[in-house]
Image (tube, rainbow, N blue to C red):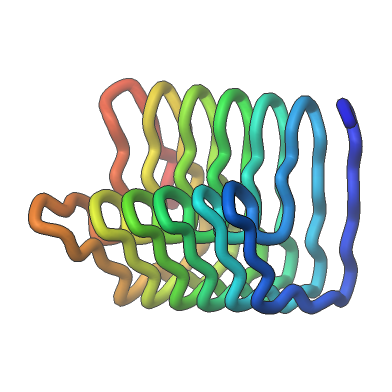
Length: 173
């Protein structure tokens, strides 16, 4: 439903599967979801192993452990598309993967990925961006994070941690 919102506090999301998009959640048309103090592991989907965030929607992860999620194509944890965003604050994000781009997040069409005071390790993608890939005027923000041992593995792989396409921008400190 347009403008819907959900909040999950202290929950565990484990081994959820979606044949299409968003192994745990699919957000659409100005919707939002917040995960706080959650354990999110082993979930999968075609795009967005945990969440597909589409058309002016928002996904926020605060103080979460996010491990071993996967997407067959893009966004091992989140695929944010068309003016949407994914924010991770004080999270531990490890061992997530994407068959194509964005081992943790793929952002596309003016969308934003923000990582604040988080640890990102051992995430992978086959093509671009072991942690994040950004396309079509999208934005990456990364502040006070530890980023280590992430990789891309394909023949023409680019950006072990991040792939930022032409027309996109990054703020990193």
